[in-house]
Image 1: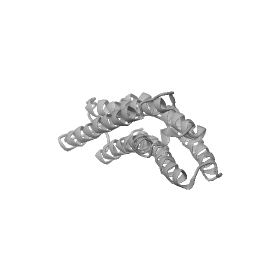
Image 2 (image 1 turned 120 degrees about the vertical axis):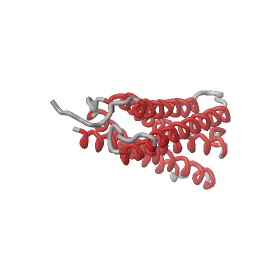
Image 3 (image 1 turned 180 degrees about the horizontal axis):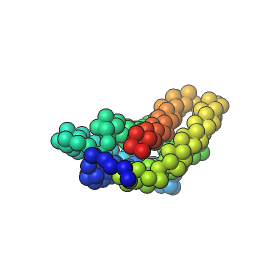
Image 4 (image 1 turned 45 degrees about the horizontal axis):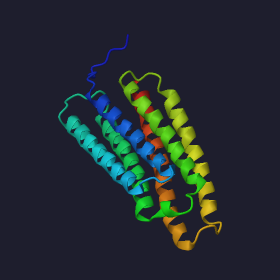
Length: 208
């Protein structure tokens, strides 16, 4: 039987889980933008609240690392995972903020591909939230990072389609510039989810 000197205290795992659950809240709020008559300002403000909560969780995590002599796994990996989860939330919040500030939801319809990207992010968020509690046992995680990476590839495909549509002449030049900035944040969020999954894979391999 494998023996480890590392503690099994659950505080770190609870913080990772809370951070990942916030990502689900973030993608659910972005999905509200597809609803008719949605209050875009309210969505943006609630996303900002969730982002602030995520920042607080990250601060708690860093404080916990600095006050713990022996961590459950490498403290560098704990820092990295916490930072990457926070990065995802930053990108999600930026999407909602830009859509509101640029008034893009006042268009007759947002591009279908934009909603498809949000759907991919929602799937990645739920996968991540489901995986974080399993870090404690380091079991049954492989399917998570494989599927998350597959979804990132799907997001890349949709993003290319979105860019083709933006430059097709359907939108005026100013709208294209605004929408391109939103598309960049969506792609960055999708990539950030993959970085989280890759970090989890690295941790699992080290601890196996």
